[in-house]
Structures are given as C-alpha cells and as structure tokens.
Image (cartoon, rainbow, N blue to C red; front, side):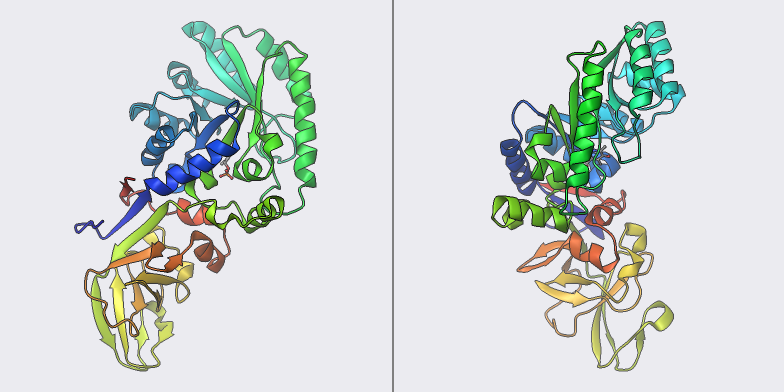
Length: 386
Ligand SMILES: *Cc1c(COP(=O)(O)O)cnc(C)c1O
C-alpha cells in the first residue's frame, strides 16, 4: 500500500492483530473478561484504530488511563465497558457517572465525592478498587481498605464491581517469587472484602506478562496491553515463556505496527566531509545519502543518531549524523537502486529484513513500550485490512 501524499505514516496490520487476539482468546478462559488496554494512544498504535480492531477481534472491554481517553472512545461510538485506571479530577467525577465508565478507585476523597454525587444525581457508578500489594504505585493497603469498605457499605449508588492489583516485578526477572508474594497479599485482601459484605466482588491482576506466564492470575479479567500489539513485555518474559512451554515463542506474537516514510532527497557527499549538525559523522568514502523527512519531533529518538538503521529496498541503511527535528540522513552507497520517493521502513519489516521496537529500544537503553508509545500522535495510523 502507498500513501503518496504523506511524508510519514503508520500501518497497522489487522491480520497480525487478529492473530494475536486469537492466541489470547485461546489462552484465556471464556470466564475471564479480556480487556484491551489502549492507554497512551494504544501504545502509539492509534487509540480509535486499535479499539475498533480490539472489539472486532474479541476484546470484551477497554481499559485506559485517563477520563479524556475514555470520553474520546465514547464519542467515537464505543459502547463497551471502559475502565479508567488513572486519577480523575474530583470536579470531573460527574462525567464518569454520566458515561457509565468503570472507575479505578484509590482515593478517599474520590470515594466521598462519588457517594455525594451519585446520590445527588440519582445515578449509579461502578468502581474497581485498586489494592496495594507491593508495587507502591496506585492502590490502598490493608489498613485503608477497612475504612473504604465502611463507606462503601453506606453508599447505595456505588457498585463495587471488582478489586484489582498490578505486579511490580513480573517482566524484569525470571524469578517470580515477588509476584507470588503479591498474589498472596491480594487474595487476603479479597477475602477481607468478601467477608465484609461484598461476597460477589470480581478480581483482576494480570497484565500481558502474567497473562502469558501465569494462567492462575487470569481470575475474572485480564488487562492486556503490550502483547495485543505483538510485542513481548521483556526478554525475560520471552525466556520464561520458552522454558514453561518448551517451545520457542517467536511465532506466538506478531508485531502490528510498521512505521514508514519515503526518500525526500538523494545526494552525493565526497570522502572526508561531514554529515549533519555538529559534524558528528565523517565520510570515509564518496557516499550516496538519502534524506528522510522524519525526526525527533515525530518521536524518532535523537539518541538514535549515528546508531540505528532503516530499511530501503529490503536492505538496511545506517543513520549518518544526528537525528534532526524533522529529518534524518542514511547511507545508501551500497544500495544503488534507491530512488527519490522510495518507501522506507523505520520500524517493522521490508523484504527479509526487520527493525524491531526491541532493537531500537536497546540502542537507547529503554523498552519497546516507550519506543512505540512516543511515536507522535500527529502521524496518520492506517489499518491495512485482512
Ligand atoms: C498499562 C497497564 C496494564 C497493561 O500492561 P502490559 O504490560 O502492557 O500488558 C495493565 N494494568 C495496569 C494497571 C496498567 O497500568
């Protein structure tokens, strides 16, 4: 597919996405809700595009970070359940109630305001209580829980639909003892809730890594983020999966995103001249260089300067000089067929070559999550249908 009028665009492969969802639908029992986590513009993949594919290919619900993400989905016509996992400003809680969102709850102030508002509006709200089990991010501990439950018992318009937690150390290690500690703490708090007058409360804990590695954490719902996009949460998760399943996980997940641009100018640079700002690259031979119209303002990290590769005509071309705001330069001396407006892959596959998010992440000491998430929202996301 070609988009002649665009300098840069992202293609989202529906067939790759569908394969990933099919894998997870098989892996997760039908008793567990499969919630597609589409926060941060669906990890850079395009929130509405991915929500559409998620619903079409078997997600039961959607999860986001912010109220505005939830509103965007509603306004785009998504009528599914949407869980908001991050904080919502107290003065905007009425929007949560009006839109029947599920709200992650971890502040007493929020609970009190919801109790007041729901009574005033005569409308119900569903909450998912976030429990602190050892990540020490959002959540309430055992002592606070008692207090929350007291108030909840006297809040007839608030439905305590579920309680949930999040693992601290499941991706970054192949030793999962801390995850087991958290599950234990979680189960104890769930028992406390059930025996305090909420016998039917649902529970959930699993992110992608837990969904892949620990079926016993699937409970009533899994919150599937990175892996629906065809990316492994980490190398450790990949290795742990391989050990558990005595098979290579390589073909289990299919990356969904391909980031493209096209050649904007071709030029010759003599030997012993420099390329780009700061003159950080010196040619050692007469070089043929392609200038590409993407840069750090698009989310192509400046630390990739002189480090990464792109794909043109199925071959790797190394970056020369620094990444600019809107441009990069690559060496095509050994790829003489390259022409103006040739399609270039910055992330993804072309021919037999692949630039993975993990490869780019490794070059700049971060994780694949950050690489895709930081791709600018302004770049069009185009779904290539099956
Ligand atoms: C982002 C997030 C997830 C999804 O995590 P992945 O590792 O991307 O699957 C699940 N739960 C919470 C609370 C999150 O913030």
